[in-house]
Length: 414
Image (cartoon, rainbow, N blue to C red; front, side, top):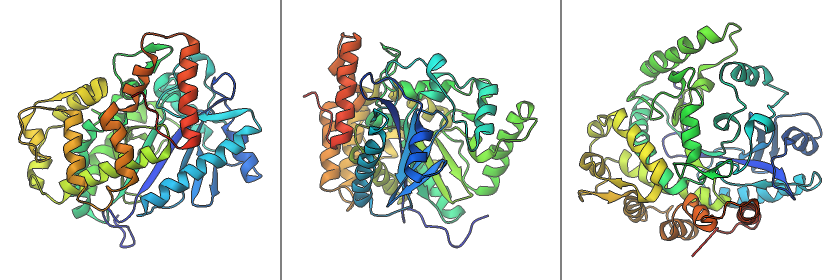
């Protein structure tokens, strides 16, 4: 049930970044997340709070999550704290001859032979997932994302936020895709993480649905239709009853009524935290415009079909900023009167509109300017590699990405 102590819409935000742990020399994945966390905390643990940030485990042992320890409205300070968190993590990894590597997918990892699941706290849940879905696959073990958590206080705020989030999800990969390569080959999509996530629950497809969440705008209906549907879908595979509906929901945005937030999960992790923050700020500014009904009323926003949004998400995940959007009704939701624009042009419009908000200033605009000028990180990675898929070239490009993460600088090809 809604609690009076909940944060209100746009009052504060939670941001989580996932990074690969790789060997310092070879850049192959290193399954040592548990050892790193234990060394930092002085005891076995799955979480370690380090000043304003926290580190935690993920399903695979070669992945660590870095996040703000608490929701915050000061995203510029969070950006600085996350970069400092990267430095602390790199220092902790140094004794293991390992480093962090960004981007949404490791470019040559073979999950069938290199995956090791987290064996400690909650291992029974990870093992249960593995028994049903086979977690030694890219969609489970080789997908590094950014989660943006947006609060709501009650059904009134949830309805507006959920409607806006559904509209925004399809175009986020145009800014945030960073995963063009899978096992030394360019995939058919620039955002291959999204393709693999699309597929990873194929045995129980209700868990992902159409990636775009259903047009549901109150807690009671969501609990009945989504949580109830999730429990019913997993029941034939869950005789031990280990799964919780909150964690079964694998849509591109999920409602967490237990903590009063909507969590967006369609963004790949970028080359350094300030870029992730800038993309999140651009997303927040666009959501504020939608929630304020500046372009179209709430009723119009709520009526856009899930199938329309899901199809657009696939197209933008494939072609990122160059995707042509010619759905006039969709464009009107964002105040665009042109008959056709690219996803990149739509983001230029949204960022210009968002510049009216205090958030879209200074360093945020500088980070976004690189994306608008040179393309999303997936486009820049593909341009840097060209036709040269030799291991030496892949290593050179992805080592440069790791250097960008450590130094807090943009990966540019222009």
